[in-house]
Image (cartoon, rainbow, N blue to C red; front, side):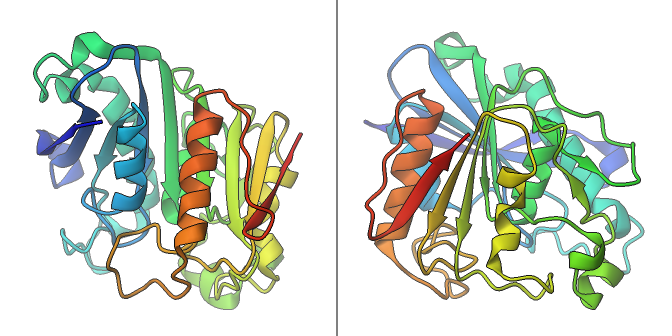
Length: 281
């Protein structure tokens, strides 16, 4: 299927300090197209995650990718007064994309009339998965500043989403990422959680099972895809040629592409038994 990408589509945001830039990718044909709002990981931007975006758009999805303030393209440093609250701005970015959906779809002539606005999903990787989880209903322990689950969002895909905080955090994470203390008990929206069983993180004192907390601690319905040997890049989802991919593995990337697409389209996900395993509740 032929696709088109338009970027940047700029949403003015004076209070944010930098306007919100969004990439819009969509099939050139088809009607009733579902939407994925994708939140990138730390330092990335709207131009990343091509292996996922290319696959999803070819499968008939419209993908909207905002660039968050932590992106290396914006150079917001820890000295910036906005920096401590970037995690809240990230949440607001995703909700702003939904609020201004008409503006974003208008960037591609004729697209607005081909989209199914009742089939909107959020997805994200790493910090982006934590951001996306808030729109599915996840909370931050001890903080009620976020609005909670967004009723416009019907499903989610959380790729390497951080687990519980408190004593599970490493001293570094506890000092620098105090907000990283999710409560998944109210995350009722259906979601696919993807974790690598070799993703040993400096953010936690636990083993790689930390990345599966969103599945085990949230209410059904949920699906968990565990990738054998997968590290934090999950085989290379951040790009086709990126130096931070430590576990380059096309089979893992293909599994995520196929399982996430089947999940979001309401099909029955399947995975090669040599690549990973699926479980649902």
